[in-house]
Length: 189
Image (cartoon, helix red, strand yellow):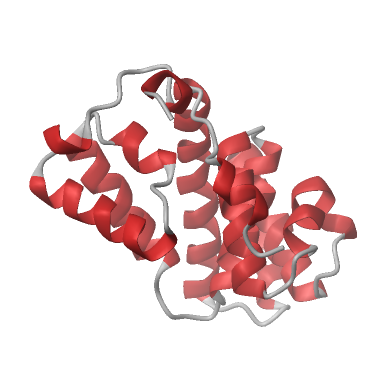
């Protein structure tokens, strides 16, 4: 795939990237069999690349009250609301794999309120959408609604932080016209 297909901005050649970034991209390629375009598009600014993926990993690759599949549900639902094709497609693929359910990502992306999820997960996504789309309205009652479903303060923080982080990511993907890799479409189906 050529650089214009990845982003509307210049994409550096792998050989021209700093060693730590190149090593990370090569590790992802070895694990997945391809390089997700987000890595290539963001590599044009190495300091921002490092900060972005450090924050991503801190939110998405940790243990806690949210499963990894639930974390991906937040990304898919909020990314759909933000019209981010890249994140819906890429994280939809990851959600299908982590949930071991080929239907769930499509259901969550189209209308999570009708998806085959638990009431607890629906409350989680209601809150995530509020953070992503109307964060000024988040109040104690919104947080109390989560605690009624068994979420603790760390879970609430995680839900909000994931929604907020991916709201930024959605905007960058849309700014760059980032194209989802074709490989994502068939993953987990």
